[in-house]
Image (cartoon, rainbow, N blue to C red; front, side, top):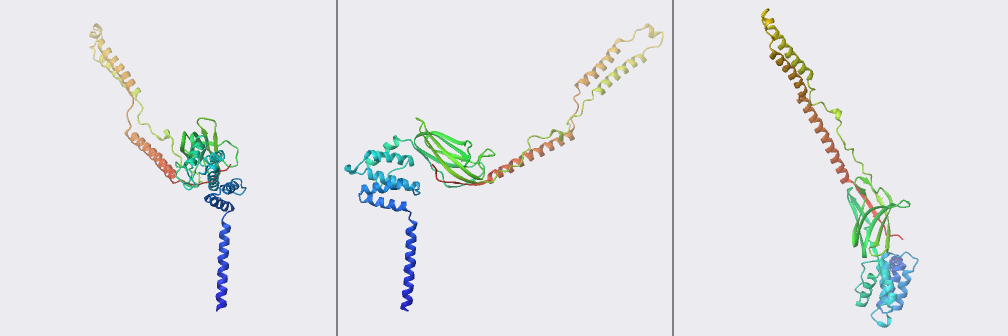
Length: 358
């Protein structure tokens, strides 16, 4: 039994040792050096903290932005402590300017802060133009009209520009938003311009450019972007009603009939006058009444005027038919517009924005 217990204990120790070794291996060399640098700074070993922090900044190993910021903060704290004899102001100011370029709105942590270092940071910020964009890594865009906010902060008022281009292509990037002059602003990464899709699925590069409003100083950041976005397929919206579908709503004018009636009445008047004259020899002795000719002429003239004034007449059946055709067309337009609005609202895309690249 003791042998079994001993075997189990040995196995447990081996497992524990393996787990500890694995945990140790998961700590990166950079993180280990930073831990040593912080320990040296806490022990007021400024020279050691300086050396260790510098080794991180010049390391060929992959150093994250957060690790670089921590190394800079340890370094400036080691270069400009409260002890006057250990202060190297110019060197600390140079690294504080580098810190400002990395984090324009960064502060000194309370653990290493003191009024002299805080004042030196403010000097570095006043004399250094820097800007930094902080896009969110994982983004879901809901709706064709939505956009991804990209906050940008600068040490001085700057003109900000957001442009977009295909990764690996040399074509000029397309500017999709701008702002400023401002010290902080939010640029919008849009996937659509109206119904025109600017960004389809694939690999892209987002470029944020900040230009100092008081000088030519410029800061450029480029972010790799991966987009998964379906195309937006919209239904066709009828633009105009086909006029050939409509019927005439007015009957043509009866001008010939009006003229004929006027002429007929005039002729009938003349004939009636002639028929009603007295027989010979009375008719030869008395002249025909000229007023009859005037009346006949009036009938003829009335027929002509009536023909000119005749504009036709409405056809109620055709008017009703055309109203229905127009209503059906308007409904088709409305249905298409509503379907397109539904498709715009239902559009979804995922956008992954990586760390800034040199």
